[in-house]
Length: 352
Ligand code: NCD
Ligand code: ZN
Image 1 (spheres, protein in one colour):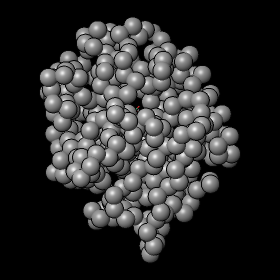
Image 2 (cartoon, rainbow, N blue to C red):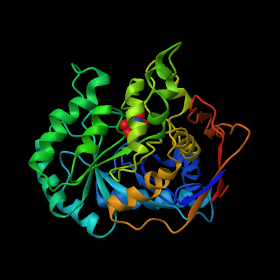
Image 3 (cartoon, rainbow, N blue to C red):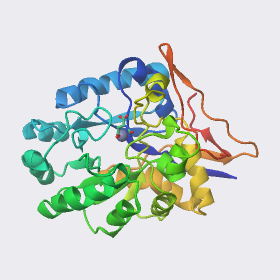
């Protein structure tokens, strides 16, 4: 069995910088035509100038890793309480950025410069609503009193819903949705709200992370939830609803920083996202909905044309091996293990 799709895009990607950027850039460019690049570097990508120089570093790294690829990075700015609305509007107007990212302070990896109180960034959000600039949201509250498994649902009730009522014209992506509550909140909304979904949240639940031993390579934020939530996410991804699209949240960390007494959050899935998704959609009897999820819904939301290039995936009789471990300096990045056999392969494009 073989399927050909419009070439996919990744609407949520961490590429990092320096040696890590050079090590992982090819994994995305091999399959994806465009990716929305997360700004949580240390220090973060805050201004239009930061985004332009980071974009140039990414383009260079991709050219070196995979000469001849058609990859285009689409940039975001990291929203802080001192972000200048004028700079955001200018960076969107001149094509430097496609979106702005809101991290609640302390929610996840490299989010210390994030927002402690949404009221403090209202002038920027109002300018974004006026100029039709998309806000991408890491949707978790950070109060230590809220259980980590409840942080997404609580964010929707206490931050997202009030924000949307206050500023209905602001277009928002609730990123890497992990709960039934999140999926139905987005599915039921009628305007200006979309969601990205990751391959790992479509394939693993919290038992994969915690039962029979702790598996740090499945630790990411938002944390994987119960099986019933995973099933709700699969239903959303395979529904054909244009409000759901792929954001891999591929987030490389070295093995030493993952396998640690305080391990980093993030799953590195760039290299096998597409073969994993073919498997998930086939199992759901929804291969005909895969193209909408990976290649059509995202560009439509962002007001871009779908790619002209195509990707062909083929189902093989033998199990597809896991991607190679990636070397970074004297450490390694371990790719996502979907915890089940996958039989799909990317035939073309594959610039390797
Ligand atoms: C991301 C990272 O490592 O930058 N980690 C993660 O678990 N997803 C940050 C993020 O997107 O939350
Ligand atoms: Zn992320």
